[in-house]
Structure formats: structure tokens, C-alpha cells
Length: 154
Image (tube, rainbow, N blue to C red; front, side):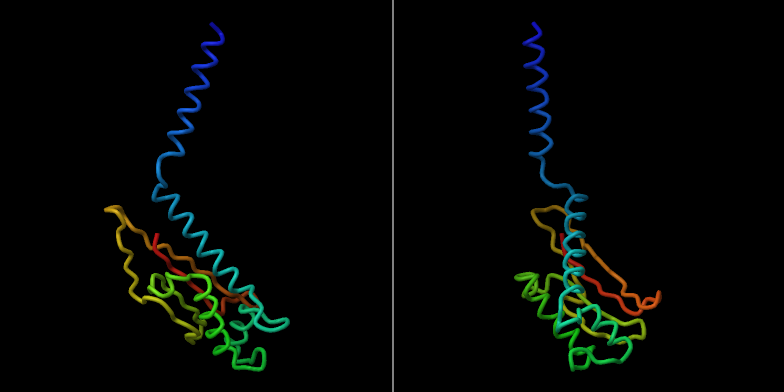
């Protein structure tokens, strides 16, 4: 009798696990996953070395202060390098303009603006589609001096 109860409990547990994992991703899990992708892409870009001792984040800060980086004008360097990183990271979404990306300084200087500036996310399979934005501010001396933003479709 106890063996039968154990088998029934085991079958119910396995069935519950199967139902949980067989249902597709929900809108919330998709949005969370895409938000993490945006965060990871932006973080990786900001930490990428452009030349010895100078990251993209450093170049953006130098741009905001009208300084040079790696022997070049910082704003131009940051924009060019960010574009190369986007091409390498986003792949086909880059070619399809399936994203919005920008870096701006708080003084109003546009470092780069790429992708579809009026991003509309298509519905896939009759379901809903979400725009997933990720924005990170860049600070120097405690003050926000720039913002970098990546928006993708989920």
C-alpha cells in the first residue's frame, strides 16, 4: 500500500514538472530575458578596451569633457567602435534594423544613433510583441554625463 502511494506521488510530481517546463515562455520571462541581453550587451560594450588603458566608457567620458582618447577625437572613436561592436553582437538584427541604440551626453552631444529610430516590433504567431529597453547612465564625479540605451524586440 505504501509503495502505491509513493508511486502515485512520484507520478504527480513528474507530471507537474512536465507541465511546468512544457508550457512556452511567458511574456514576463521573455521580457526579463531580453532585458538581461540588453544589459549584458551594454555592459560588455562599455568595458571593451579600445586601446591600452582606455575602455568605451572612458572614451564616452572623455567625449563629454571634449578630450581625446587613443590619439583620436573621443566622440568619433566612441561612435565608430560602438557601431563595430553592435554589428558583431547583434548579427542579423543589426542588418534588419531590429533595434534602437544611442549614446548621448547630457550636454546634448549625440555620439551615435543606430537602428530603427521608430522601432515597431512585429507580432509573431499572432502573439504580442514587446519593446524591451535598457538604458544605463554614465557618471563622472557623481554627476551623470551620458546615457547609453539599447532597445530590442521580444
